Image (cartoon, rainbow over all chains, first blue to last red; front, side, top):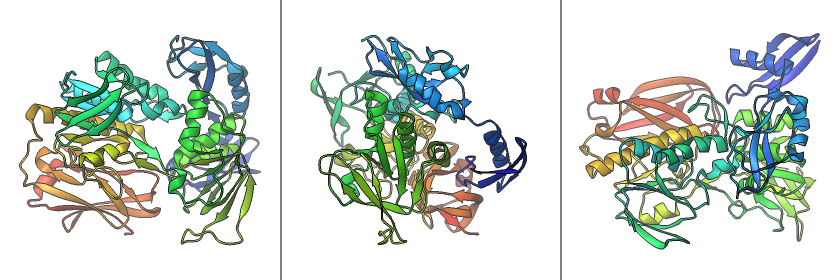
Length: 121
Length: 422
């Protein structure tokens, strides 16, 4: 049996959760004081995902960088692979909120999209 | 120079929301004065997500949240001036400002909305011993360098203070390839949101050392190392607990201070607890027609609350312009008192005549309280007793007062907010 320690992010309480797992299945969540902790723990140990936000170089624009995010959450263990693609990317102005800057970033099937407008300088 | 009914000082989230609300309340003579070269304020550099859960029921990044309001300002045709510094607000609400195009100019406003936001506490205010080399930044300065200018301040980082900007920057610097060695926090608890501690520090294995502070800074030209030590209950370093970290960057995330130089010079009465103006239920200061909202009033954790507060300031400014005053009898004024754990309340007074049906009173506590009660007393009678599993200084609390409830209590003079164990 495997045990994982987590801190719940459901509220400022920050309960220390202990998740027991067997063959990749959650068998027990302990330490939570409310149902939020149980839901959070089950998702977090089986399939932790995050939205990654960063900036992409932009040429010919009124700004040096265009801020961006993954259009939806990506697996947590792909964060640095996604960052590598974002850091290598360079786009041309203009860019507007929601525009796709990188397609299928790091093979995740998720696009990186602009989160601010950069106009042609 | 053209005149305006309402001048809004600051084009960040508070100023934008106030302007939109004022326009929607029917006023067509509004001017926003912004010192930066674009609207949006600090949100433009807050590229992480998590904004707008309350307002838009979705998680936006800072620039996206700002743009929702910027677009409304543009669509509504609200006037604004960028690169414009307000120099003075006079008691008669004449606003003196300057920029490159107009030079120095004065606008005799009927109402002024203070929306200048806040500033980070700098090193000079922290009494950190040691050398003064390059490589020491406030977390927000580093955030601007990385996210707007595209520069990395350094490669090996120590962060003092666990405010949200510090936590966000710990993750941001890590994502860009820096090694964040430790986050030291003077207090025995973090000033940041729990979710930021988990998603910015725990996710990347960055240690958070509570009850620790920086006791030495090394480096002649550029930072080379810092020493941190544990502090006791008196917040003084405990000898023998020192640990030295080699690093080229020290980020400071040690609190935010409302930026009220203009307010003070105008004669606005200030709270010594929040460092922001003392306001009534209409978010009006002691100077009739001068309103305050957002981080210039008190530092918020969530921009959603800033927008909501600013909306009320905008609407009230329009009422003031229409009526020439905030109409009310001066009899039903109730004082709000924060005590026993509660540090302050916004507002500080309530004139029941002017109060809307529901009034949100926001406050912060001075310590971490577990399994305690938020209590509200009308004079000596306890009218609210809400149990909370946890109340922490890093998360703003609120209570909602009903006008009908206040009207039932004849001659109510004082409402007290406090934290009780039972």
